Image (cartoon, rainbow, N blue to C red):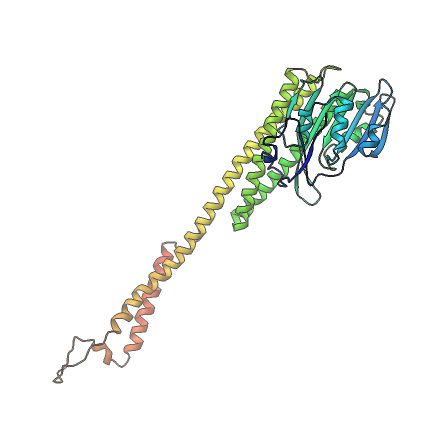
Length: 379
């Protein structure tokens, strides 16, 4: 079946994958839309059993398609990174019998899920990890379990699966003695374990941010809180369906054909339950941090208003006195008769000093009153 591939833009924000591709409107079911920034496809291949591991060098799809199959009894892992090559989807369909609807999901952003409706297990999960530059990556990881063959497909070259590869290269590890289904479980477990690292990092950021907010809140702290809330919401959108994914694997025994690994899947399920609780707790903490920021900003504003109010209260009586003595009244009538009630203080030899002294005394008295009431103390 011919699969049409189209170049479409992708969204780079790590957790903004819940967006429908408008190019799919009216398209034929099973049409593959390759992102315009997809990385070139590389195929890494591993053949292993209890006696050894054969790790083949990375190659393109055309070369991987003509490689001979491993001997009977060996487990084959095809580690595909990058989905730029349209030949990848044709190879998967023609050689492994992957349905076009499953191929369509490979190039689109999907929630974690597990399906077994085309004679094999198809599973999608999300890898979340920090790159060396500190940026958060949210990558899709797809699984196909076809007998003794496991195919994993991801969009980027970096991932969180290296610990499993290290275990596979270690001849003393029992992973070599297991089959493709157990390898799929090990990879899924590595993905879930890495959720803890991301949430721990977010938790440390919130703890440090809380100390900064207590000392001196700044506007960039509010932006940081909003970004943390967005990341935590994205983690919840991943952990919640991942829990349902593992629950379906246990309930319908999708990974129990070759060997019973339900007990291991229950351990992964317990981890996801704990992760979901931890995510909810951190989301509540982020809301509390936003309330703390607003409270601290409000308190600082009250401090500023208190200082301004005290300054205004000091100058109000002084302005009143200056206003009274600024009025112009004649000291005598037109006939020359004195008017004793019209500011006789104007003719006092030390009237200016007396007025300034009275104003200063009033200001000092007010400052003393404010100090006695404790208004100079910080909140």
